[in-house]
Structures are given as C-alpha cells and as structure tokens.
Image 1: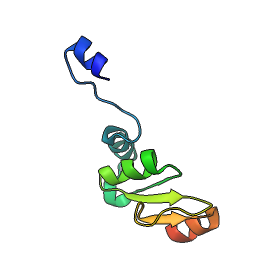
Image 2: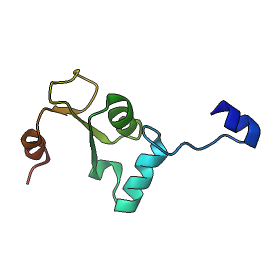
Image 3: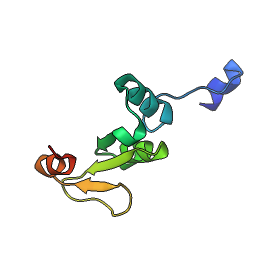
Image 4: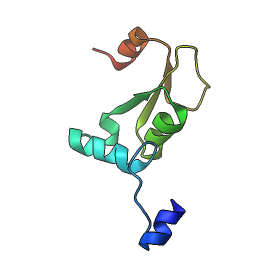
Length: 87
C-alpha cells in the first residue's frame, strides 16, 4: 500500500473487510444504520473487528466455539443464530 501511496501521491482508500468504508457502503445501500444491522461472520479479523470498528453488532459464527469478549455474540449453529435474531 505504501508503494501505491508514494506513486500516486495520495493515500489510497481501501474498500474491503475489515476497512470501515465497506461496512458503511453496505449499510448505506441497505438504508440501515449501525444500530439496525449486525455483521455475522466466521472471521475475527475481517468480520468481527471490521464491524466493531464502525460500532456495528458483531456475531461470530464459530461451530467449535470462539474466544469470549471478541464479538458481541458467538453462535455455534444456524438454529442458534436464528434464535438470536428472533422472528
């Protein structure tokens, strides 16, 4: 990334997980705010940390369990995720 910044004379905007612009763009396209959505993913680095960086609820899908305190919620199965999300 430094080579691109140096060659272009500008800092690039990275749009991809876990960078905030990707999450913000997705919310904008859905017409939702951070309090109206949750990111459900299986990657702590890109999904959970990305969502938390913009204040979105993060749900870690980890069938074998996951570390406490990283995500707002950890679910081990789709039925458990369905119960968490409600009707």
